[in-house]
Image 1 (cartoon, rainbow, N blue to C red):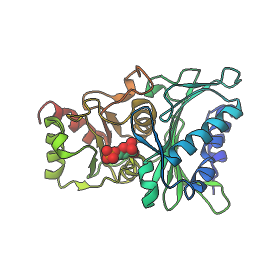
Image 2 (image 1 turned 180 degrees about the vertical axis):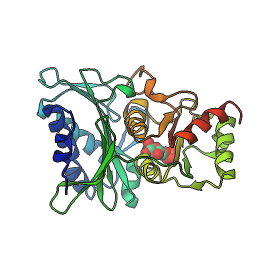
Image 3 (image 1 turned 30 degrees about the vertical axis):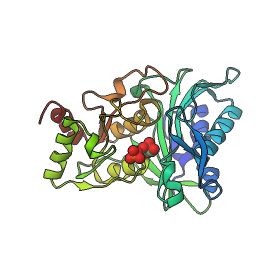
Image 4 (image 1 turned 135 degrees about the vertical axis):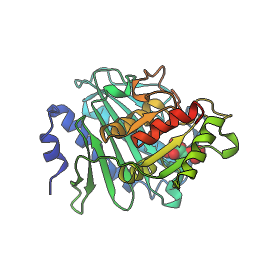
Amino acid sequence: MKTLRQYLDETPCEKPLKDLIELIAYQSIPIRDAFIDNQTYAGTENTYGEEQAALDKWADNHLISVLGESGLVQEIASEEQADIVRFPDALGKYAIVMDPLDGSSLIQVNLAVGTIIGIFRGKNALQKGEDLAVAMYMLYGPMTVLTITTGDGVSTFALNSKGIFALLKENIQMPEGKIFGSGGTRNEWLPGHQNFITHCEQKDGKLRYSGSFVADFHQILTYGGIYCYPATQGKTDGKLRLVFEANPIGFIAKQAGGAISDGTRDLLTVVPNKPDHRTPIYVGSKKIVESVESCMRGC
Ligand code: P6P
């Protein structure tokens, strides 16, 4: 059984970065333990006007506190914070981007949710996704599974009965597959996206969409296919965020042989213009993502 630390010791990552990765990964234990006492909505909204679940705030506060105390992190861009959180006295030279609890509306119906993390070297959290040093997510499903890349392939680890992340799969390659899922409502989809969805249906695509980006992506990482959250008539920039969601997940997708696009270009090459930079997202198997771009041009 190869542990997460043994795996990291085989990578060229420097010790402070390995320490930071482990520190974050093991926060999945207190975060998961907090589910039962944080089932409802907090009665507040985030910077996007979305209702915050109690667990959104709990996980955000917890991770900011732990990362601040570590002294390893210069700044954090969090989906739950209007502004970047800075730690000017920290000795570490890393910047974190995070969605502390993605899919939180599913907590009270006991469906899988996750924590999305990206780590940059340096003090700037608003870098292009392709410059990430580490991308990872913790998926709280029947098992607690960590999916991670340090830039040399994607591996998964499961939290075992001893509370240790043990290697599950190494060097994961995303197959071409038929799963597709899309956010937004059909009557709000724009013609190009409607064309693409019709294309998927005509290719005998299998519709799977849970309401949790992390859970839906993890299925696509394993079976192949595509997750979409398109631009819509009401949200011409889409719903999801480049910094906290698209970039870490897209970096993992690309490391596994997949791709991420906004329907016109590789999202990992886009410089975020602000922490709450929204973007349409098409992420999954390489050929399917490429077919989106041709559908947007009128397939
Ligand atoms: P909708 C969760 O709020 C999230 O950011 C993603 O995890 C999920 O895929 C999407 O939004 C769900 O959005 O509009 O379908 O509820």
